[in-house]
Image (cartoon, rainbow, N blue to C red; front, side, top):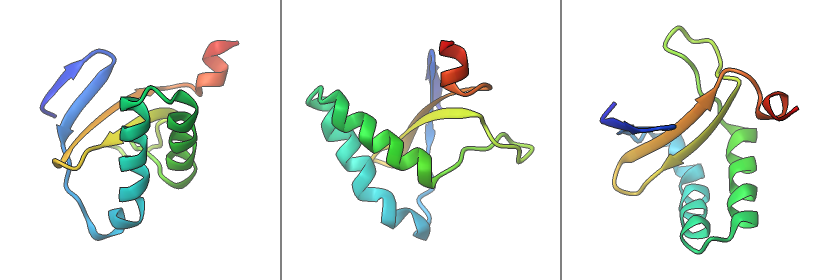
Length: 89
């Protein structure tokens, strides 16, 4: 971990071979956020969440998360221990 900017946590990311199939989705997510195209950003988030999981150090899954992986080898994420829909109700 390199720091926090609540509710975000930041760290260096080790890019492994399996990441390549997702690189374009994270790049598209970044462009959408920069352009304040929230619908497109949400679509990228949905695609990321449907394909990837975030786990705690003990290996148990995080209920809900948002993840950004940047071209410079850094990552930012936020998480919640309950699904966001459950929190909103």
